[in-house]
Length: 445
Image (cartoon, rainbow, N blue to C red; front, side, top):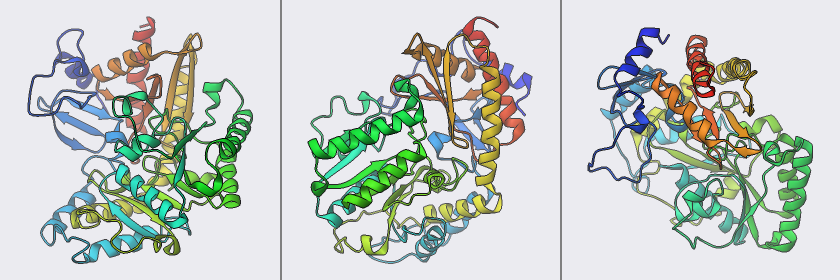
């Protein structure tokens, strides 16, 4: 547990009124393009915690944006990496076939939907999305792609074109690749509607888009996050995903599910889309795949993946890092052995109830939505995004030793992203810190 004295130590190490996220950043060899929650150098991680140079402890509920899902430095993952590093670091996939890569692909296949039989491995989520789009285009012979408002799919040129969560990800880099059309996403809170009405509206508008901007005959794929990530941690309603699957089946458009942030147990299911009963044609995966080592994948049926002419897609490091494969294999084993999917569902409910209790008397509108341990809290004041309060709460939490990230188009959503093996005690510590932060910011504390 985060002891009271520990929280005081975190606060005392900072100048009065200054949180780690506000500390001046001195010129260095690091590019200034990185924005950062905490500028205090971190030297060690263990489980749900990070430690800085002074030994101060932070409860890390960012998970590196959903990456360290088994916690920092899980012993089994560390051991697998160390053992593999002594045997084979790298085997380039165009030159050789690392045995562990084949083994991991077989293991991953056992954990994915029946339609996902074969995989291409890469380094980042954006690479996985790029590969998925290329596959969809070559497999269908069609040129266009539909993405959805609020979605985030990466920072390369193609994935920026697909992204519609915040203007900063695109501003200054346009024009971007053409042939991308953005359809509305059923964010019921944003529209001020009931979920059913939002779903019907968005499916109707999607049908209209297919008649006015890109016909089915020229549309290769639709790509959607089952839970919006950067767009505000908004779960896609089951009826919406079912509607997309139906339209794709009727038109021959391929359905790509971007499970980069929502996959590997994050939402209390192995894959977020499973709650809806649908299956994807192509699925992208990353973040929690290897407990912190750079790795990603996209998968499809053997028939679909065979549409790639040999040599038409590749990459120097994809699939060749035996160390990343070892980490990914160990991560799958930890998820299974420690029942982390079930733990995410159970802990998610506990965290949700605790947040609802602490916000019950808050004077302004807060929408709390969740899927397992993927919880978003949207702050709204007088019908407008309340980004100022959101940032203040985030800063207060950080000054007390709790790391949380902000997302959403308006910068007004606090996202809760703890490791999947988080404990009740750690959640209760975080809730206590959060409650004090809310009291301070609202003037009640």
